[in-house]
Image 1 (cartoon, one colour):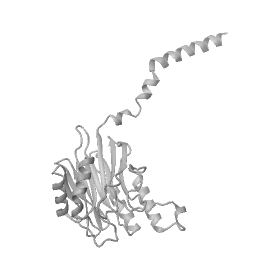
Image 2 (cartoon, helix red, strand yellow; image 1 turned 30 degrees about the vertical axis):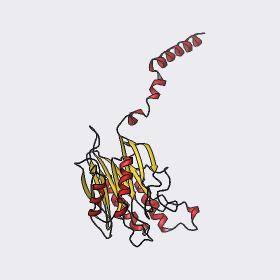
Image 3 (cartoon, rainbow, N blue to C red; image 1 turned 180 degrees about the vertical axis):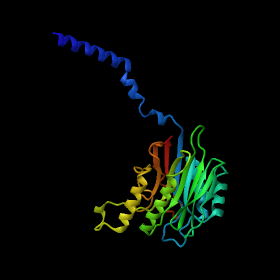
Image 4 (tube, rainbow, N blue to C red; image 1 turned 60 degrees about the vertical axis):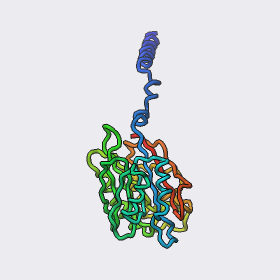
Length: 275
C-alpha cells in the first residue's frame, strides 16, 4: 500500500515538473539561433575555358555576362579563378558598377590568377602561397558586431594530384590559423578526382592524393556544396565552397547551370549561410 502511495506521489511531482519546464516549447527553439543570424551569400566560379581551347583563361568578351550573373544573384563576396590578370579584373569591376572591390593574387608558375570580389570597401587582400602557386585571401567586415569574414579563392593544379595535395594542405593551413576568431571560407576549383573505387579498375595514386587532400580539408571545414550537384562539364563536381561547421549554418547551395557563356566549362556555385 505504502509503495503505491509513494509511486503515486512521485508521478505527481514528475508531472508538475514537466508542465513547469514545458519541454515542447524548449524543443521548438533548437536550431533557431543560427537561422536568426545574418545571412552571408558566397559564390565561386572558374570563368576560364575548356583545356582544349588555344587560350583557356577567362576571355574579356565574356565579362559582361559574368557581371550580369553576379549582379542578379547579389553575393556578398565572390571567388573567381583563371583571370588573365589585374587589367581584366578592372574591366569586370567596371561592369559591376563599382559595387564590389577586388584584387588578384600574384603570379606563381602559371599564366593565370585568382581573384576575390567583396562589397566591403575596406576589405584587405593577402596572397596565400600553395606549393609553387598562389591563392588569394580577402578579409572583410560583413555585419555589425560580427567577427571578420575571410574568403580564399583557390585553384589547384588540373593535371597533377600530388601538386593538388600540397597546394590544398598549404591553403588549409593558412585558412585555419586566421586570427581574431574570423569566420573562414575556402572556395575555388580544386580539381579533385573523388570517384568511388568501383568507377575504376584501379585505386590510382591520383585518387589517393585527392582523397587525402579532401579529407584534410574536412578535418577543419564543411563541404557546403556537397549536395548541389556537378559544377563542370562531363558531370564533374570540382568546384567547392568550404566553411567552418560550428559557425556557418547552410541555408542554400545551388549550381547556377546555364550561367556559363562562350566555351566556359564551369558553372558558378552559390551558397547562403546563416552566421
